[in-house]
Figure 1: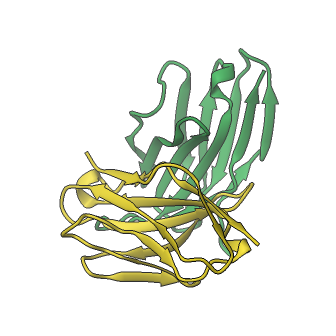
Figure 2: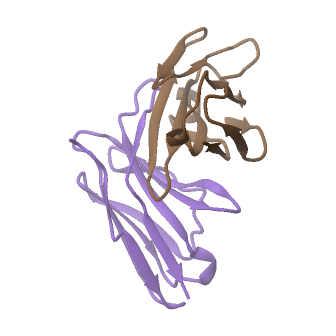
Amino acid sequence: DARVTQTPRHKVTEMGQEVTMRCQPILGHNTVFWYRQTMMQGLELLAYFRNRAPLDDSGMPKDRFSAEMPDATLATLKIQPSEPRDSAVYFCASGTGTGGNTEAFFGQGTRLTVV
Amino acid sequence: GNSVTQMEGPVTLSEEAFLTINCTYTATGYPSLFWYVQYPGEGLQLLLKATKADDKGSNKGFEATYRKETTSFHLEKGSVQVSDSAVYFCALSSYYGNNRLAFGKGNQVVVIP
């Protein structure tokens, strides 16, 4: 059963530390999304990639966040330095984006707590 | 830009009641429309979708019809169960939005036995 795998599932870190979240998209999917979910803001799109190239990262604070796809089987989201306001659940999703019909499959998320 | 609007606030209803969650959208061109469901502690799962006007998506007793004239995609279920308690998100994807998936804010649905 193909699924998107995210690691770690939970992360507690101190303010100022670097955090790296990893995502393994479903094999064959050419589109990868990173979302952040909080009670206040709901689901926010941080970045997304098509065929490993970044298409849109306008939702991401550039000074501390970075997203990459070093290869087709791995996407990473890094926060450096982390701040308490970054506490949220971060979701990765993958899909096959063609002709506007992008159906996304979500991972179970990484719950980040910055203290 | 493309956007999705869902009705405000949680929805609380009794088992076997009729459920409606409103969703309207703004988009350039002809988007595909989706409903996703999120159970506690889980990621989002696709519930149903429709890719062109007048299409009806359906799954697990839920239905939604793509209404281009009213730019709406309301979710309905005739008889809800306790197990339907979850958060429901309306979303769209459009070629003119570079295929990015835009979500509404979601509605918490609580079904009481």
